[in-house]
Length: 385
Image 1 (cartoon, one colour):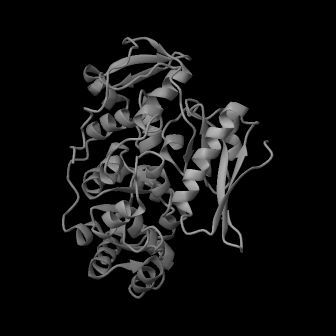
Image 2 (cartoon, helix red, strand yellow):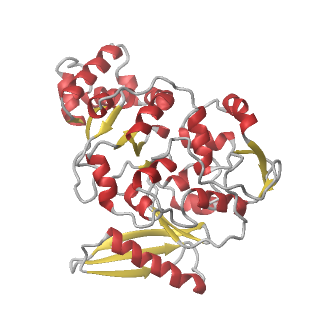
């Protein structure tokens, strides 16, 4: 398995340092680094590390995210890794659940700890615990979860026995934000299901999280997977703040560029920057995919009007369809009583005729993966918006 900083798969692009990168050029760079121009021939765990994890508050999206990027990916490749404790689901970047390798969980957690602390500090749960002995609550929660995995309700009920005047959900949230935890299987295993059940990182992996909280390596890995990028982009992906000083420290190892609006971009010298007119095949991205979420300015993959169209009040991000490299609509899979699985595509605008065949073929391949047990498969295009 490659080291976390491995970037030897990257190749130098043609743009010169200090040049202007167009929206399409940024799009093609992102697609290449995400395995969306051409599928990677990699083991599942190497793909997870190359992507610096996959957002995964819902159990199945990481599987679809790897299927769309890895040639020959099978659900058991990831499900087995979760069961074997070499991949985990844990709160990390942006204080959201990510599917990462075990070693990335240990390395990334100290770096993003301030994000989780800041997020918790702004919640009603923290306000409910004002005046309480927070260190004692955290120690008690850690001890309970190290003893055995527990659901949030079980943890809250146990903690309330000691703090009866506090809301059990607030007690639970303090632990899930501030103590390094993982969700244990069967949740997160394809086809298995299960309630969110937690234990400590140390209890599950047999190792403590690392002590180095410096974000330097994480930023370099972000650029390898999502660059070229602005400081604001790095902050949007990670949830960290005040990274400009860090980026300045890294500047001697980076190449500078500008986007069409004149904003400073940073990139790795040997990262791929394909020609802006490189053909891009249709791809289906799952809900919450980081290719859509990992930049402050997401115009490199989704137009601002379309981004607003898929925004929901509760923060859900639907599955999206890429056509010519950009988000062109959303998709869902539903099963009828007859056992037919139907993939419905809702485009933002009519899909060009010369693209529809390729989109349909890719949709059929996705159904064969995501609904392999269905009695039949169907692809439909709903009326465009």
